[in-house]
Length: 58
Image 1 (cartoon, rainbow, N blue to C red):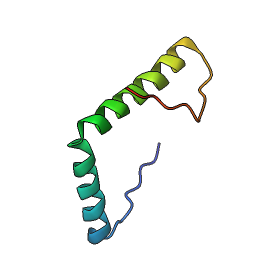
Image 2 (image 1 turned 180 degrees about the vertical axis):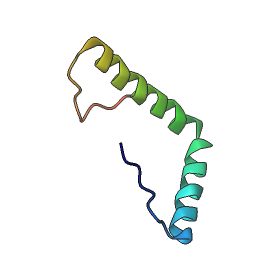
Image 3 (image 1 turned 90 degrees about the vertical axis):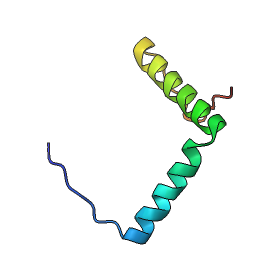
């Protein structure tokens, strides 16, 4: 497996980091993200098809 490093301008990188930091301080965002991850993993484990438009609300 080959891994390559993609060069990202500092301004873009900083903006992305700031956006992620803002999102992870929002408890509802993190809760929803965890629920989406759990739904995908559950479907993978049980072999059920994943519906791409499925949204998990808490």
